[in-house]
Amino acid sequence: MDSRAVMKRRGCQALLVSIAALASTVSRSAAATDPAAATMLFNEARHLAASGRYPEACPKFEESQRLDPGIGTQFNLADCYEHTSRIASAWALFLDVASAAGGTGVLPQGKAKRAQARKAGECLLSHT
Image (cartoon, rainbow, N blue to C red; front, side, top):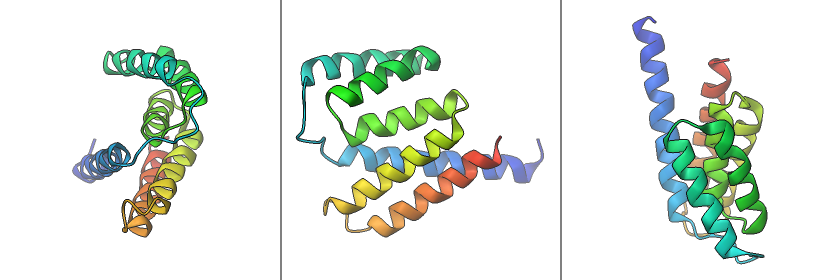
């Protein structure tokens, strides 16, 4: 891999990390149907993802999101999709996360975060 490709990859990774930080600062949705089960699934999925077992983690993130929608779960699901080569789905979710974070009033720099998510999506697509 040439140095430009390495630099671009590092830039994409840094961008995704900043979006992860954004996701952790925004509160979860109040429309919960089973927060306890969702939390259990989320924790299991995080453990699986940390072990590189993304194909097993994605369905748990999906079910956690269905039971108790939250921006952090949505971000982790997008990351999971990225690691399982579901690039278009990952990009769409990353954009949704940035958009939701920008619309909460928690982070006034919503436009910048949406631009970061778009850039992350472009980075993801450039690696296919």
